[in-house]
Length: 68
Image 1 (spheres, rainbow, N blue to C red):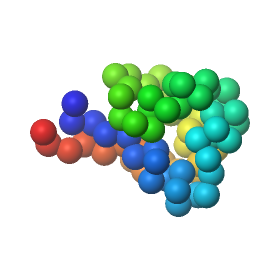
Image 2: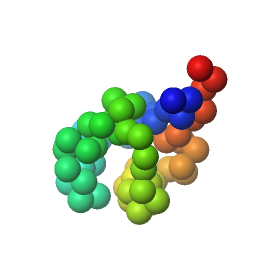
Image 3: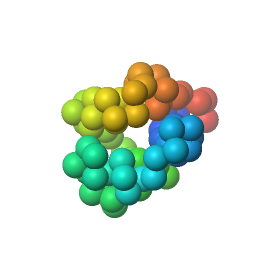
């Protein structure tokens, strides 16, 4: 898929662990890991909203399109 989630980079910039983020937004660690490793096939807008709220970022900071 050409859409990539840059969650790992944003977490590193913010100094937040995946476990901490998952707890803050009410996401299981397994689902957070799926997002972080680019294995997600879809993302709910409510999840994207929670990620942006907790990471103080815009959706474009988390998602990027790369040609295959």
